[in-house]
Image 1 (cartoon, rainbow, N blue to C red):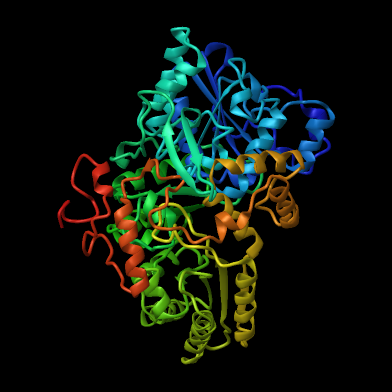
Image 2 (image 1 turned 180 degrees about the horizontal axis):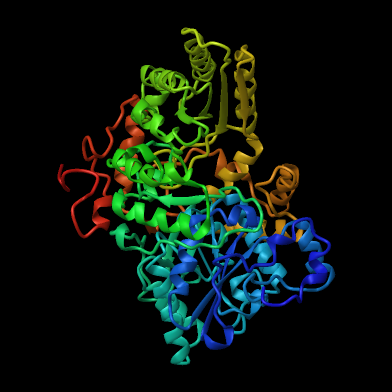
Length: 617
């Protein structure tokens, strides 16, 4: 902030560094010298939001525009919220300290369904009406995007415009449209109409849902002529020429990912049937090693970070990874800058690469088999065998590792008790593998982390029901009883949290009433254990006449109209249905480089598919 108007408030909070702004490399423009002001909000704590690369990229894209100033705000922790309320001070932006209500646009990134209450609470703390229908021309336009916007309906009553897909080109287009409409003196309604006609933007007020007597969505259509029936997601085709923030703000306090985040590629070639990101981020597009090396050098020089994390859905699927590692190590090793490679696929893990990366410092190694038996791994199309899992773990042990973390899920479609027990058996085999060779003076530690399956839109499992809460918890206890070695540390996710996540992941516009009621009753930070209150949520649903089982635990018919069907992600409904059928037969689909499966995502690109030799492979 450029002044100390909030100094008295900050004396009474635990971490004032969350709320002062002014970090090294934070953007600054004189508000009096710009014509359009935007506040980009992350609906979670500063430590989480400052770790989000997408937010940094989009803020940078808009601040490159002449006459536009994009600032930041994060969800205030309850101690700061109480100060804002007690002193009747509205939520403000970090750069200028100005209230969010003073901006032309307030944008939110939606990374997780359980942050929805934070979105509405931030509006409430800003003095901005929650409902879009209650905001006239005197209030900012509310824009939202991010992975959860692929089913925007639970927040449809509150958001003016949703950005669907990648925003580096789309959001500046929206800002320019706003500036043009304002210059022409056009009302908000006309701006929204024109925004709906831009590719990649959804304006909820211009669409009307209808519901049948059975509660299912019976129709969803535009309510104004000229508004498209389908909203097509936006993508960036050439990642080598897209903006990357080489001098992002360096936080004052420790954040979740306090390092350089280097995005290597977007999309995925694998097709795991439970994974929403693997479908909605298609097609696969990557950056060149030369570009990545240049970005990494500049980022380390500008920030002083001593670690670089290579980020993507499955980093080992980058075909030029060894070349990239060699380029980076040529200068990171002498400077003692560490490299970390998250998201390793077991079948692509090999000893030479691990040894190179470990040459600076050892970092944690995580694999994700997802299921404990081969039958269930085939159902979800994981395309890895037990032999490959054990081989990868053996290479890790031979390379000096003695701790591993393994991710699994329970509640997957067709899962049986034998599949659950298979997780314990596989973990024990890994422990036994470590001790099959004498490793002097060392003990092994295998962490088994198990989350609950949540059916997500635009996946082959989007029609599937989530297991009941009781069944998820029964399976968690079953697995606990099967793990008998003290070398295995078993951790599992709160099934109640997963159930609420499923409700909002597959929900429709009618859930808006529950979200508003939840905020009125004080719900916020639902993603945090200390603030999550499942019983209160069940009471809220009951008061609002909503049955959470209708969304989370109901098997959907394959011809049912889904709340997100109006969005075109490129991947076709026919492909998803075909993959679902194959899952029931235990048949796998090869990755996109081995053989094109005809998912449809190639239609989003002007050139040939980068996953395969060509479109018709």
